Amino acid sequence: QVQLVESGGDLVQPGGSLRLSCAASGSIFHIAVMGWYRQAPGQERELVATITSGVISGSITNYADSVKGRFTISRDNGKNTVYLQMNSLKPEDTAVYYCNLRTAKRNIWGQGTQVTVSS
Image: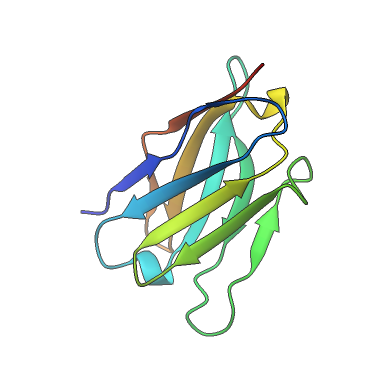
């Protein structure tokens, strides 16, 4: 049974930084594409960033245009953990952030962590 547990969400002022973490149980993390998504009140869940496994070659990252240059996704396969470093945060980044693990046969979501950007 694979489970994802996010942490790191908080209240932060505009221009501040946060680092989210997502720890995965089980043995498939190293082959999975990991992603961060977010959902603001009244809006659809949207992609923030993804990172491929990097098992065969280096990991490949992908970002939503709205976060490019401000957010960085990374992973540590030895710790079964994926990170999202968020810098220069804006009020519009306020949302529940969800971790996602995806393989050919599995699509698993974490419970979410709240990020609020406000002065």
